[in-house]
Figure: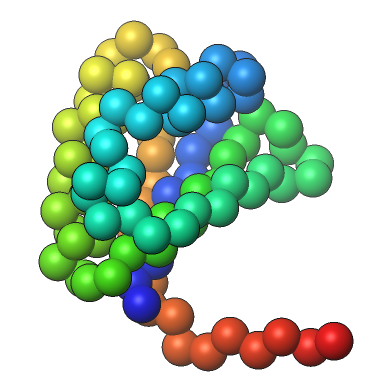
Length: 96
């Protein structure tokens, strides 16, 4: 299962979260099955997002749509230097 990992600093987490929740790219329509939002415990103005998709093609297409959105967000100063990569889940083990 391909996972699109995204990370970047934000100026204000609550404003970023509102924009994320507005879903301007259409996660479900774009093939996202599940997502996680993470923040480093020592940096509340940095976010890491993991989007799980069914196919590599869907992940590539969704990333292309995000890059278009990011150009506008960066121009307005809402975010800076987003980094993204597509990784493949090799193994998940639940210990407990």
